[in-house]
Image (cartoon, rainbow, N blue to C red; front, side):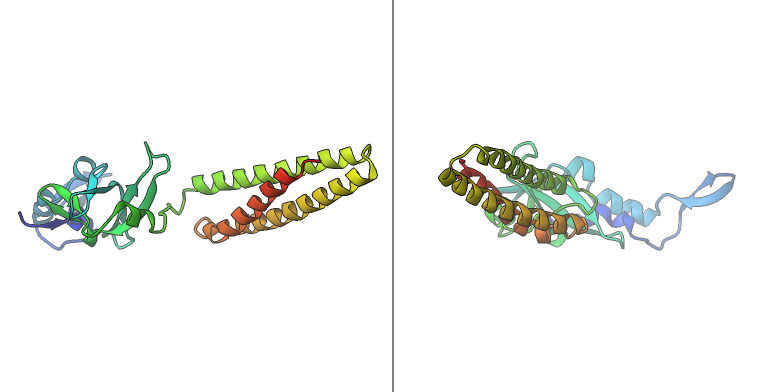
Length: 225
């Protein structure tokens, strides 16, 4: 069976020059709409995204399932540029989506094949995120803010406890409060930087915030009073 690349599925998006266009009445005037005969042929040979691609399993050339087609991304020039493949997870939870150039995926006897791919290799690729989708960012920020709030709350509790504490206990609590305050202040600064970043660049600050909030949680565990 002749190999067909997924790019064929959206060839009608490109402007093709051909005669025999269909005309239709639009708002009192005549406007050329629809597809040409050439485009109709291309459409017939192509894939239906809804019926054939979306949710379809992707295999490697050894027959192992490595992911599932979750979306197609069309570049500004209206060519299909990438297939979004999801690996791992369960019903969308914990799934790792990546962008794969369409030329790397082929149709072989009705199966989508990505030669040389493995599930681990796909999971090792940078995660794909929609530029306008802030869900993961919002979840990350909320988790960081929770850690910071827990740190501040524990500091307040410890400071109250020092008023009735013996001198040796007070000294220990003061040390714990100082450590918490330093870590909380650092985490707040890192989180502020992340919040100022654009939707597409917040990941540049993710590691710094993660490390800072991890220190806050460690100090919380050590702050026993």
